[in-house]
Structures are given as C-alpha cells and as structure tokens.
Length: 72
Image 1 (cartoon, rainbow, N blue to C red):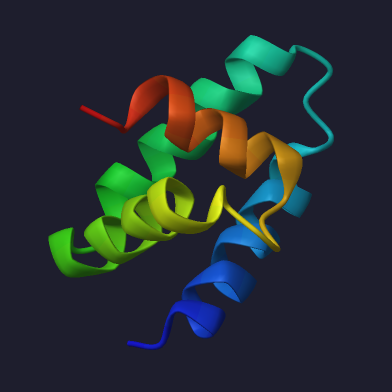
Image 2 (cartoon, helix red, strand yellow; image 1 turned 60 degrees about the vertical axis):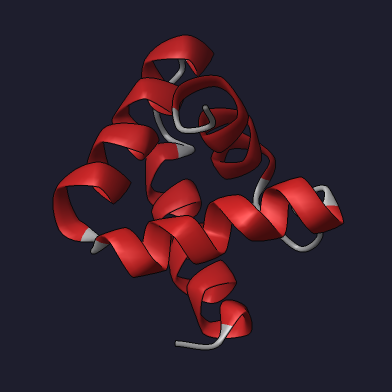
C-alpha cells in the first residue's frame, strides 16, 4: 500500500482521537488502534516513513504515538 494512503488513513485516526483531552491517553489509543487493526506491513511502512521523513504529513498526535509507542 502506498505511504500516502497510509498517511491519510492514520490522519483520520488522529482526527478521531483529537477529541480526547488527555494527550498521553490519545497517543496510547492511536498506537493501540494501529496495532490492533493494521497489518504488520502497513505499520512497518508508516514507521519507516517516520524514521526516514520525520513523519511528514502526519497528524501530530499520530506522529507522537508512533515515536513513543511503536518504534524499536
């Protein structure tokens, strides 16, 4: 799957969790959602995008969630 599509989908998740006033909880929820509903190829592609392109185009909470909870 193209990374642009993954970014769009991840940003939709970020928009949904924007309503959560607790930043740390929102980041945990985003990471949990990705781990639960995305396959490993999708996650790896998004993590690689974050590592190689500093997460360009990603919702700030999605970027923070990946950086804090999904990178090795």
